[in-house]
Image (cartoon, rainbow, N blue to C red):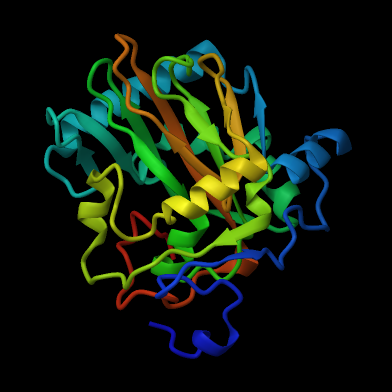
Length: 290
């Protein structure tokens, strides 16, 4: 743990009592042009996210889904493959950009990685990539959280100078567990209560509501009252770009229709990971590329 952070860290978390504080860092960083218009960038800065249809074509989607099927069969019980506790179906598959050249080439495109460079004002690298699968009738939920809180506490990401892109491999509908997000919540940092235990990451990836790294219900309720909740839907091939500090969640999928997304996190090169700010050890490389 980075003990010096207790005096200098503007994002203290895993504490005895939760707080909600203003974010001191920018959302959109200056210094880069890119594929988005000024209006699109302003929309992202205000809301913390932006959804765009047709970022992937049908061939891209089919190719990625084939790659995921191949990797899931190939990896077997590899630790990068996370299964649902309910029926053993695949919940998440990590480090897909390292396992598949095809996926790596797709996420390097200007309309994906180029947008991240534009928003973060810097060269970028992939902090984490994964596919989240929610099969019909069995896909589990993901509880309310800020990704940055976890990456700061457990991976040593200094500031929220990272952006996530969720690429839909199936339609994301109101019925199959699509993402819920609080627009504007990215401008607040919500700390979480509790000390992070060692070697905790594996169990947390299986749990819909981990006991560490999730905000207090009272904080979630007050944030929802202030910012509201928006459900993000879109067709296969659509992309959701969202700031790493947005509060978001998704319900389980009890519909007959699967919901699958390729999720990639771009971190600014200048925001390289340090030692964890509130954990005793680094998480594995497939969760936090160094």
